Image (tube, rainbow, N blue to C red):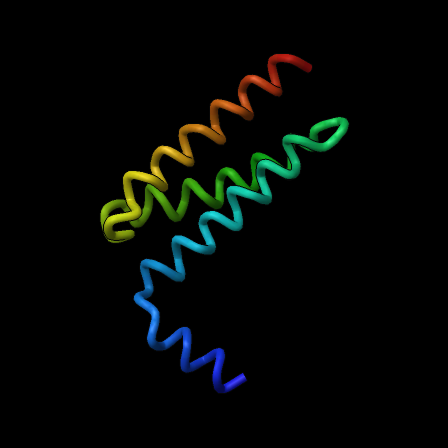
Length: 85
C-alpha cells in the first residue's frame, strides 16, 4: 500500500485525474454498449466526466483538449443510441 501511495504522490495530479476521467468514460461506453443499453447508468457516468472536464478545464494540463473531445464523443454516442431506441 505504501508503494502505491508513493507512486501516486510522484504522479502529477492532472495525470491521475485524467486516468479517472477515462475510467468514467469507459464506464459510460460499457453501459451504452450493453444489450439493451443502460441509459440511466451511462448518463450518470457521462455527467461525472462532464463535472471533471468542464469543471477543471485547462487545469487538466496538456490532456484537457483530449478530454473535451472524449466528452463530446461520448455525449454524441449517448444521443445516437437514445434516438435509435
